[in-house]
Amino acid sequence: MHFRYKIEGGDFTNAGSTASAVKKVLKQLNIDPVIIKRTVVGIYEAEVNIVAHAYNGVIDVDIDENRIFARFEDAGPGIPDITKAMEEGYSTASEIVREMGFGAGMGLSNIKNNSDKLEIISQVGKGTTVEITNYFNSK
Amino acid sequence: MKVAELITQLSLTAFTGKAGLDREIEGGYVSDLLSDVMGHSQAGQIWITLQTHKNVIAIASLKDLSAVILVKGNTPGEEALAQAIEEGIPILGTQMDTFEIAGRIYNLLRQPS
Image (cartoon, rainbow over all chains, first blue to last red):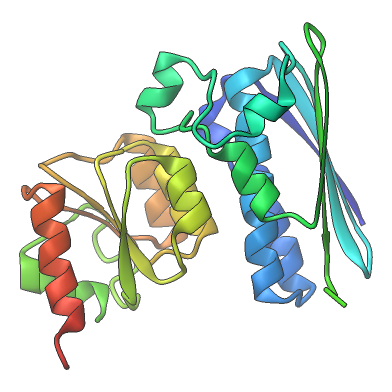
């Protein structure tokens, strides 16, 4: 099963719609609620990161019997220092974004804590790709 | 405790009318940082905040929270309100500040029913 969603930078009104759509699909597939909860947190945060930091992006979600895989590919400023960006509390979000309660520097650590596999590839001045995998059987 | 009962006990405003009044409140979470709520709140909790925009409802829905309470007389944005009614998530309001409303709810939820 494959889904594709397009995200516009700055479009906070629709932030969370991908996470919401994926949640519905996983529920229909009777996936373990604990895994659904983890997956939804990761997808939401990665989605918000595109809205808050990038110009636009594409989210590809692939689901098979073993796992859900989501790739977030954006055109944006990129992340100069990924290790730094992963630190809880570190944020480069704008003042406006922070006033909304975003930009607390917890997004990437939320993704890390709620995914089985996380990969971030970034090129400064071009964009960032985030890949999240969660397995349905934690055996 | 049901949302409807909490409204009566604490004279809260229900901005969303009858939406979600029979939801069960199993606890509470206090934060104005969205990623904090995303990462650490639990299903069934009532969320006390001063954020009033639509993303609050997106998070409440994704995390299966029981309701949202806006403190200090804050009112929900138009889009937040429409989304909350559509999703059946109550947005409540109080003149109390966060410390006071959290304390009241804490005590109510810990009373033996």
